[in-house]
Amino acid sequence: MRQIILDTETTGLDPNQGHRVIEIGCIEMVNRRLTDRHFHA
Image (cartoon, rainbow, N blue to C red; front, side, top):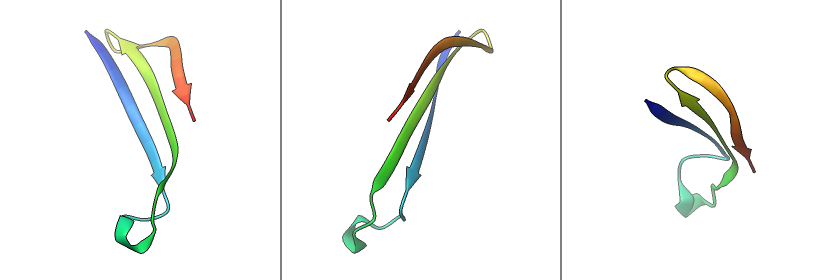
């Protein structure tokens, strides 16, 4: 089974107060094993 695990970093939880997403990362796993595929921005 293929899975994509996503992680985010934010400055807070309320966009009405100007909080925003500052970092996004993800990794791919196939059959519960890490592959070499990843993303970070």
